[in-house]
Length: 419
Image 1 (tube, rainbow, N blue to C red):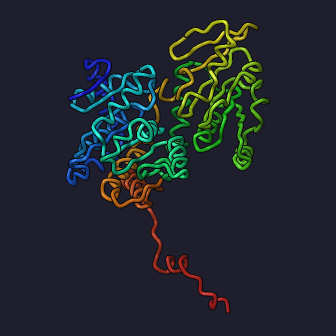
Image 2: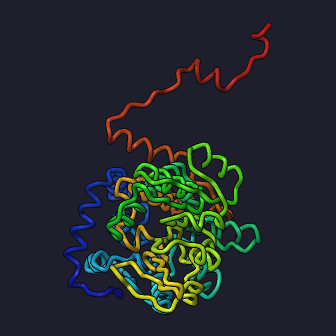
Image 3: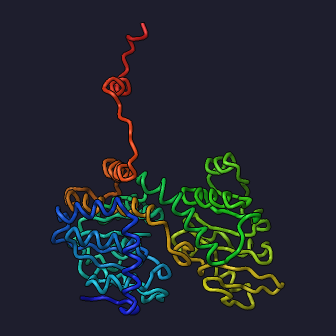
């Protein structure tokens, strides 16, 4: 048994969290029951880099139920929950993650999770992919394929594919309908505001909220902000998304103009330097900034630090930056993914669908990966549909089906019928 966690004595608390999550993840539980019989991963090694908390811990347990040897590490140093990591390590799983790890330790943990030469990798943000395409290429020898969980990771893998540099086939789990329609929109929308409200203990109603980016995650953040009574401004680079935001009732403007109006800013673009020095100079005293994108590059904290005469933590996960002109600007969770670095992440029922997709995609890779060309693949439609159907059945909801005549009508066009 190998692991590097903060303290095994924390395991009992972690077990309770995992048990609660599992009880509220019926789709993944059904897959676990199937895996217990079929053992699709017998003899296979799976390396997993995700936010290490209760829902992902249950995914790791399900993969192990399917016969896999699993090594788990984080994909963000502030999203690891040490008690959950301890719980998995106490069960004999290879776990390498500690909350708040410095950059050197974080990368070492990623490498440790790859040391057993995995057959399948499950990535969230592309950290495994980066290593496997650079310093850890020698770990590719047994690799069949991988799955990618989030938008940022999929974008990076598609860049590698376009350049002809991708080393293994990958299923873009993020792009599944059951992922981006629910996880990205409803999961992000709820979990971001849950984290902001619990961290700040401040009112949202009546505030002006600036949402940077109107992709699926941004849509969810804006929707919940409006539902909480905020006035919402959206900034975008895509004219179509900007029009969509406008027609949903939000104001739309450049960030240069929004900077002086916002009380609370949420970046969710997947890009860097969304909020920079020129925006800090225009902001109101007391504003709150946070990030809901994968990496901590959307708010330029080095620039903010350089502009400040002092920085101090004024409350757990809130750092105040004191500017020379007397203004104070506040940043949540060090600019990292706020819903996980300062909260518990997405609701269990949402991650039930996403991790059911991961489990079934890993199964698909195990079965067909050796015959797949090196490319980024959409998730098979039958996997997407099966996850949705399992959830509907669990909730005792019915679904209409086409009659043979209806199916024929959709699939055929007999122009003679108009004569």
